[in-house]
Image (tube, rainbow, N blue to C red; front, side):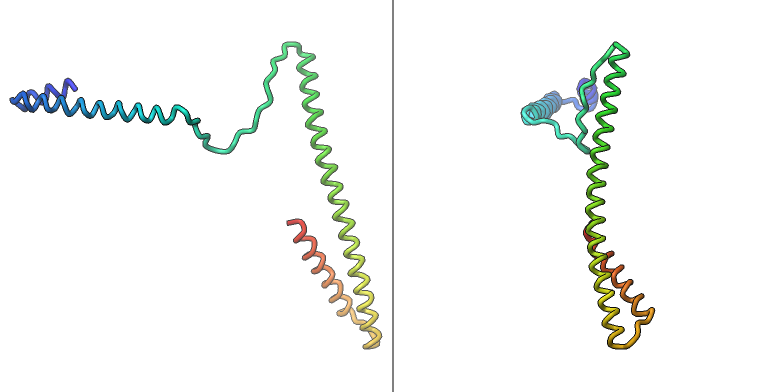
Length: 153
């Protein structure tokens, strides 16, 4: 502001214009102060919003100076993780066995239908061609694919 007044005093000879310039600068400064105080009052009661993905809570860090205790704690952590992984794998394996049973029941049902269809074709036409059997097997494949692919989604 001193530089501003100095430049103005060399350009303007009238003291009224210099005082008016000071007044305007003071008004601008008061405006900045009022705006700062309002923003400070608004942000006082609100928390900062976190940007990005939520962070995973970390387990508390325990400082252990005894190497044997530290190794024991590491082993317990590893065993805990191992148990969790094994439990998850056992659950997935049980689900796979159940799905396999469902698939086998479905295939058995459709194979019975194919046998019945081939017997009908033979009784009506007197023979069964490779084309008839191939058609039936492809039909079973399409049915199984449709039924069990839509189940996994």
